[in-house]
Amino acid sequence: MELFLIFLAATLVNNFVLTYFLGICPFLNVSDRLDSSFSLGMATTFVMTMTAAVSWLINNFLLIPYNFHYLEYVSFILVIASLVQLVEMFIHKVSPPLYEALGIFLPLITTNCAILGMALFASMRDYTFIETLVYGFGAGVGFTLAISIMAGIRERLQLADVPWPFRGAPITLLIAGILALAFMGFAGLLAV
Amino acid sequence: MNIIAILSMAILGALFALGLAFAHKTLKVDQDERVEKVDDLLPGADCGACGYAGCEAMAKAIVEGKIKPTKCPVADEETYEKIADLMDISLQEAAGENVAVVLCRGGKEEAKSAGEYKGIETCEAANLVGTGGKVCSYGCLGFGDCVDVCDFEAIRMNENRLPEVIEENCTACGACVEACPRDLIEIHPVERSLFVWCKSHDDGATARQACEVACIACTLCAKLCDGVEMEDDLAVVNHEKTDTCDPGVEKCPTDAIAYK
Image (tube, rainbow over all chains, first blue to last red; front, top):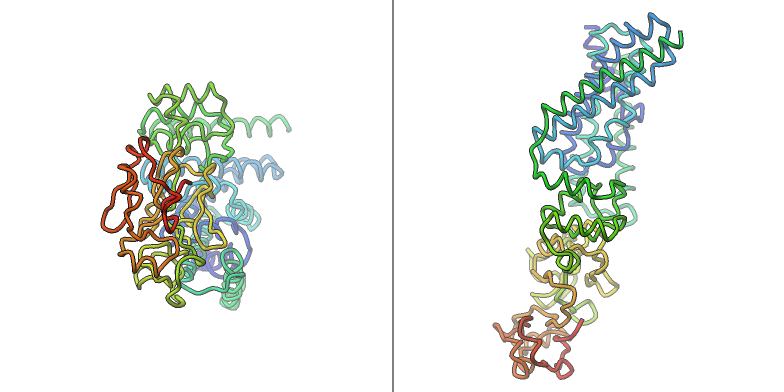
C-alpha cells in the first residue's frame, strides 16, 4: 500500500512536469506527435527507473558511509549521462525510425532536469531501495502521461482554427498551463 | 578524505566508461561505412548551419545524395575535395547545384478568385475540396505546405501568396516537390532559367479567364523553337533542345514563358 501511494504521488499528485515544472523542454518540444512522445516517455521512464536504482546504490554505499553528500550532484549526473548513452545506443540498434524521430531530444534526456530532480528528491526523502525504484518508475510514468496528453491535444489542435497570434508556442504554453491547473485537482487525493 | 572522494568518483567514472565501451561494441549499428568516413572528414563542429542536426546527420545525408558536401559552410575546399573523392563524384558535380522551381506565377493579384475558402488551411486539404479559392484548378493554392515541409528555410510565401525559393538555402531535397498537391514544384539545375511558369492544361479561353499569366496554348513559342513542345494545351520546355533556338519569350502574350 505504501509503495502504491508513492507511485500514485509521483505520477499524479506531484507530477514532475505539471506540478514541479521539471522537464519542460521535451514536454513542449517533442509533444507534437503522439507516438514519438510516447516513445520518448518510455525512454525517459527507463532512464528514470535505472537512475533511481543506481543512484540509490551509490548514495547508500558510497556517499552516506563516507559522508560525501556534496558529491550527490556530480555522481547522479554521471549516472544519468551514462544511462542515456546506453539507451541511445540501444534505441539506435533496435528502432532506427524512433532514433530518427526523437533526434536531438534523445541525448537531451541527459539534461532533463526531471531525472536529476527525481534522484535528488529520492535521496532527500530517505526511501528504501524498493521505494526509490517505485518512485523513479512513477515519476517516469507521470512524465509519459503528461507528454502523451499534451501530444494528443496538439494532434487535435492541428485541425483547429487557432487565431494566428496564438499559433505555435503560445497555444502550447496556454495548454500546458491549463493542464497544470487540471492536475492541481489531484492535490486533494492524498497528502504527501 | 578528499583523496577518497576524488578516487571514488574517478573509479565510478571509469566503471561507467567501461560499461559504455562494452555496450558500444555489442550494440554497434551496421551502417554504410562511408557515413563514418564522411563524418570524420567534416569539421565536427555540429553547428547545424547545413540544416541538419549535426555533422553525423549531414554525413548520412551526403552519402544518401540528399545534400552536397559544399553545403557545409565551415569546411574548406580541401575537405570538399576529399569528401567528393570518397563519394566518387567530381567536385563539379558536388558543387553543381539543383534548386527547386515553383512553376506558377498566378498569385492573388494575377489569378482570378472564385470565392473565399474557409476550410483547413493547408494546400492538401484545399486541393481535396476543389480549387481552394482560385478559378484555376492547376495553380498554386497558396497555403504554404511547401514552406512548412522545408527544413532549410529555403522557401517562403511572398505578399502575393506565392512561394518563393531562396536559392542559396535550397538543397534540392525534394520535400516541397512531394508536398505540393498540384505538382507545381520541380527540381532543376540552378543554371536553367527558361521555364513555362504555368501548369494549366485548360484550353486558351478558360485559362485566359482564370489567370493573367496562364499559358493560353497559343503555341507561338513552340512554333519559334523546337525546344518547346505543346502537351495537352500547355507549352513545355525541353531543356536539352533550347540551346539551339530562341523561343521568343518577349512575344508571349501572357509572359507565361520567361527567363528566371
